[in-house]
Length: 175
Image (tube, rainbow, N blue to C red; front, side, top):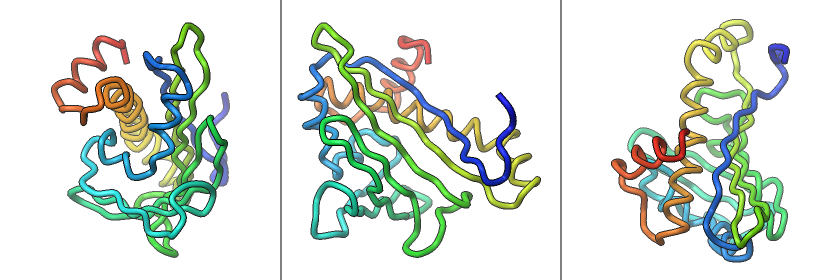
């Protein structure tokens, strides 16, 4: 695969198998306030629009070092959604453009394949591409993986994922 041009989006994704049927996974996924239970380090998640789901729904998320907005730009009932990361009218920190994708598919035998992904574009031309290859892509890949693993734990247990359990699960799942 060739190196993306400065206008191309970088893509990274992780898939895990949930021990539950797709309808049950979708009922959990569609709750856009629940990310505080499975995004490592997330402290708050508040819906900022009147609508609670579907295209146009926005939420404000906060961790210990930043706050930003996330707005649903694609919604597939029963299958997932794509959110645009931003800070009001401004671009998200460190990116020229960024999207997080949550998707589910029937994996057979009453199980569901959960895929988390991120598409992003770096600013700063050649410097941004260099930063991405040296550091950013590794950080993004780790965050996408950690969200998938934490969602699996949260969906299957109903509990927020403790950091020690996240570490154990990454080894167990070979991720």
